[in-house]
Image (cartoon, rainbow, N blue to C red; front, top):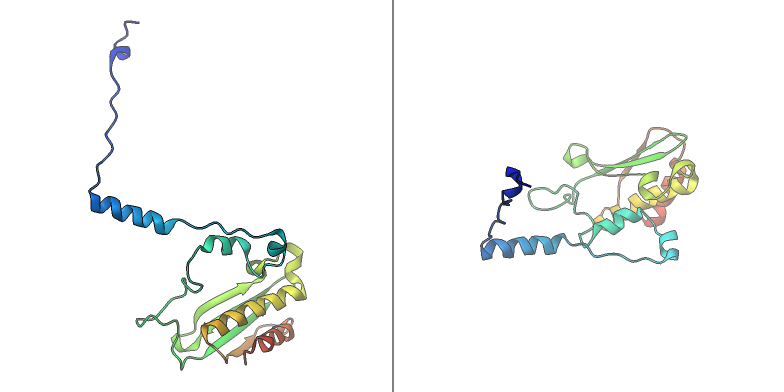
Length: 170
């Protein structure tokens, strides 16, 4: 084995050295990025009212962490009006909440896949009810008590209105 490449020594780049402050900052970032594993029983998974994977990935973040806030850190002002738009087809139902005070900016939206229904179950009455219930509960947790409801097709409006009234949304 007198080949010239067999005698050469391999040299790797050394690992960069971090200052103590940088390593401490990196450690705190890694600590915040760790998510705690959520363990649910089989019965809890079966009766879970929403998207199970999204709940697990949420970690310890607040519920409305991804909704836009104004310069004062508020999601909406007390005088803002909300419009709930119900769009439906024979296969699915979509509900969108728009803030009329912020140029009809969409605050949140929900559909059958968003609340845990798949394939043919999306068109069921239970799916429509759960979508409306999901939106109504979120609005109540935000502090909204009254909203205008508009709809594009009259197919699934009754179920949605019943769910809104059951939660206490006017």
